[in-house]
Length: 276
Image (cartoon, rainbow, N blue to C red; front, side, top):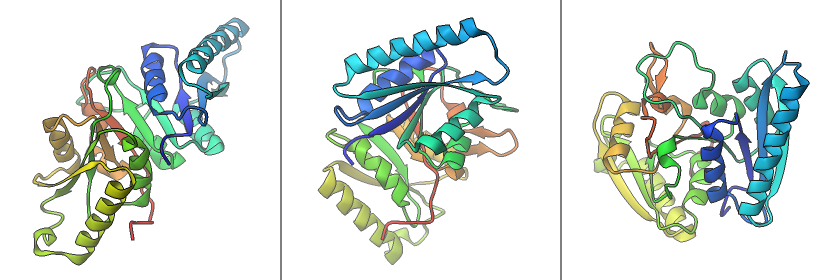
């Protein structure tokens, strides 16, 4: 798969929408992709004028995308639901996209009691990768990706990684926690096998640069975020269980990114299937 051919793009008609649309243009495949522009409207909303205005906005975005990507198919929909997150999950399960793109213009938060939208929950419930972006990554090309590495790398991570690095001069950092892979330097066979197979796939299929790193730290999410920021990574690729910064405050990596962060967070639900 050289690009994403089925993308779900929730739109709220704020500046978030413009940011998400730019990223969809960068990731979609000309002549082959379908982009679903989805607006979630409150289930009890009955104002016909508002619906008419929203349809007009969606049609404007549709025309813009059609003029920006050759041969792309744009489908628009307004879905009434009592929860934005629930609506996104339901439509993702129905349309089975390869990627959901969500833009957030809010900055770093240190306490989260409730969330209207959680990328981790959406990825976990829909089993669709969720790309979270901030205004700072608006025009940023994907040149470096950090992939947390444990004893195995789920195939779902690799399935998403390949189209991200396709035809791009990209560096992929395979990063492991020192305290999780104590046998790593001693030649642990399962770890070595996974690394070799991952290296072979990425080098043979997409020919990207691969860097292996071992890092230290007590909190997985914070350590990976700190490393990704230190190398100026464009994308941090994690699963929902790797994203949590604080269980008590419900904080995750998406809450720790500054409003103008250049880093994009790609959250992928982990399957039992692994690299063989």
